[in-house]
Image (tube, rainbow, N blue to C red; front, side, top):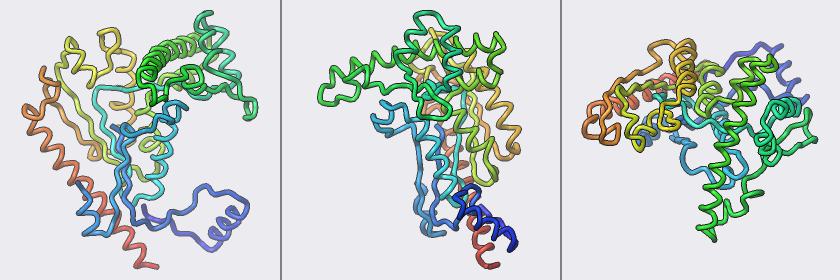
Length: 333
């Protein structure tokens, strides 16, 4: 990322802010790390040509059980995006958007007023569920209702010494998650209907992890064109009659396409992201469905090879451009 230039007055003001403890908007340091967050082997090139360390962050794999227990997974994803933005020279985010909107997590913290409003419009069963899993933390300003650790109620959720009991508690938790998610969305929609929630408020309780990542790194980020790769893929004629395969590629609820999720995905993929990026920054693919796994490495060999080559080429372009800018800045000092 090109470093901003400052006048003496601006530098003095920046230093004054630092001494007052304000560390926002600090200039980035020249980096020797290429750290890319993937939202959904390159090492030799980076090291040999530019002396860079290549790191890939994929938060869909390897998240510790403790993070799941404490509902920290989404927070960790956001922290890793910020870290990639902070330390990476050049590209720091790759997003793959297909036809699956993805997992919509429970809110981990709800402001007290919103929580009580939600309780007031919920059914008795849903209200009891909320009261069991959310507890008031009045140490915050404003006070928050916080989602409790899973193992506080399902005590064997992380008990690896008792795999059978752990599996039972995991199953119960995912069933409970479904009930809680439904209750949250029903309450949010009712508050919207009553004019207590705005459409944005309602959306906050419905959005997926993937959308939150894209908003943070593309829609709200600076210099996004120089730091992101965006791939859109459309699979034609998905056979939802084969749920074991189709649910990997599209949101399925009760053996039907989740139309609500598809609407939110369409708004993100087809409206908001294209509005934030130039068309040349988006790589699009259309492929045909195959009943053998949906995407088959033999049937789709040409598409997969093209994707690999395009991914590599576009990543190299971003790296070379950013390293060149960094060297140019260094030589002008």
